[in-house]
Image (cartoon, rainbow, N blue to C red; front, side, top):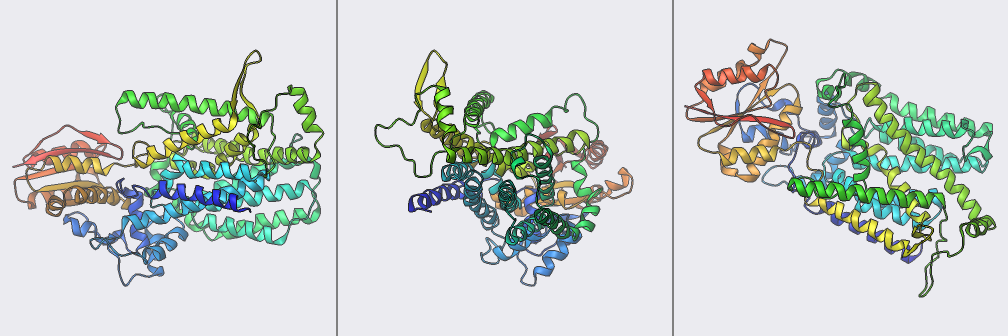
Length: 605
């Protein structure tokens, strides 16, 4: 790689780092991040008392590093209390050991910093995949730049979660898939090192996130389609030699072996209270189209996003309109690029006065390309790479929608779960832009707008940068839960000692309450230290018995008292209201709601 290309790659990484590490602690911690923090410290949620009023220090105690904790502690608590594979938590445990505490608690900036750093490392990996697929450094650079600027990528990187590590393994696995298909097309033997790397990457991916299995399923669908469909660009390499067939079977068997160790945990996930939220059941007329809309919105936000949250409705509407227009324009631009694919030589740099647009007729251009054997070879490789990565993206989206509509799983509606086809989208978009590098943007037949496509690509990058800044400024992709809003409401209505109560079934509800406590401490430390919190455990008993801890706690606390009931839903909603009114409490506010929370305040005399 020349110094210029190395400089550009480092520049994209620097841009990615700035966007991912800026305002890293601006957004509130939410329940999934608390799971990462607690288990990465080797601590347990089970040490937090239930069914009685506790202080802020007691509630947040699992966020304090424990000198006695070890990797064994991380694995033990993770396997007994959660449903995630351990690799990211082990890395996070080792990572957090290198950073000091903040006020005695784990550093949020350090915890999110690991995910942000892994997000930066995805940039050179994306460059490599783009170069490998299209044999063009330009394609690699554009894909890497889009990855660096991607609003969706920044959103995932600023969470203390395992998605960015999984994305690295997905990029590696896709690179192995692309390289394998190219070797098969050329009737070359698959090297041992490639198969070992592929199996190893797949095993590490499963050990990072179970949804990596969807990557493997999608890759299997793509490879099967390339082998069987008559229009496949892999047909010149068929039939596959017996040696290569054995290698493919070995990769499948090795990957299966690396996943077998997780079978008991995977079987235990179904029916767990922690994952029950993902089951949707029947779709009704008001929600059936929501997963499809969210899928399209998620795809667009991988490249473009403008302020749509925390701004007036009119601005959000205009932003949505602008993003839609930009997405349509980029889609049209890419279709032209793929239709007349012509990757430039890596050393092509326009000189002063040189017009990169070809002024001849379309017939002349096709004739010129056909006579260039090297270009034909590149076009053939581009066709295969497009079928591999484009097929992967289409199959992944179809699989996501199948899980949602066919099996009633709330999958496509969750933006972050689109991570398993996010890298392929970046590489496809980047290569599509390269394909139209030498074309005129607007050719209406009777009128040609003489606008060089590199300027259009610059406009795509600028709009993508605005999307990244939108996420950094918390005007888009806000946290899934908003405990900061609840904490602000509590802080603004302070008139007496406060009790915040929430029903408890798993550490998911514990994390929600910890989010309120943490945000309250960030906003008003004095009030937070004077407040008390209640995890009202809901077991198998009837609702009247389940609400008893709230009733007994109200009897024990002195008056005056402000009580905030949070997420008492369904039957517990009227029951908790009755308990509060019988205890001499009257509503101070109506029932309010924000992402992840429904809450109401009472004053007790």
